[in-house]
Length: 363
Image (cartoon, rainbow, N blue to C red; front, side, top):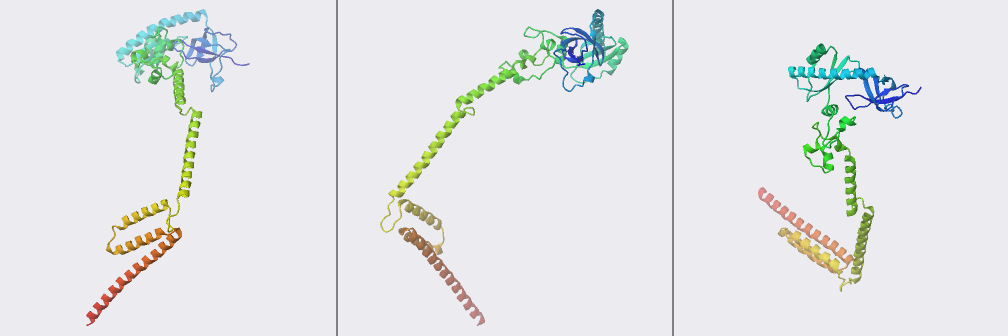
């Protein structure tokens, strides 16, 4: 036999819990008596068995069962429990004030069988309520459980009307609370006034997240359109055209430079006496200037060599490329020979001076 399940919620919470229905025929908004971990309780069907499915990761053995549909005696007991809840909440509030505990009582809830009472409270920090539980159990003669909840859950339990004029979402249909940030209000161009964007719980309104995704998508599409209009990342065809124009301009420049160099080569005629073209002569002049500026700071001993080098460069500049290389080689060999001779002469002069000193010492 295939197991059937239904989604059921309880009075003090909008959360939906899955229960096994069995052979019962249930509809939405039917009141049923179910078995829970804390005892027997009465709830309301939110999801019909035809639409309900067991959540993933939940073993079928751990799912509790629906005992029966609620009867008249169940509704009478529910009314008695509501009266007892008011009296228990009054007693608990008095004991909290006597104990001077920093906690705020929200409400009390009796289980359907009347053997257990749960007190819901809010507090900024953890509270040591062990002595309070003992006093309440001795006074009410039932099992007492204290449960700390968040301020949003407290607003859902108490209920109320929002600034929109409708019932609070947390009390009407919200079963879980999604995080709400100021960024959502900024994205929707709302005034960042805490009085206007906060609910009665003091936190940001849950409805800020309802249309946040639509605003975010609209903002993203607007930015993308701007990029397309400006020729940004989105405009692929325009970028291709721009690249083609740039490439064509670079190609035309390179072709123009090549043609200009060819024309210069054709128009440059050799001068009389084997002189070089205008470009080669200009390069030679620049080289001579650089060599003259480098050797200007040399000492007196380098003056002769510099003069010989410049003269050899002048002679080499008047000849063709082949003659230029030969003259440079010859001039280089001549300079090296002169240097060697000068060095030998200096060494010989030093050697003769030493010999004279030795003869004087001997004498």
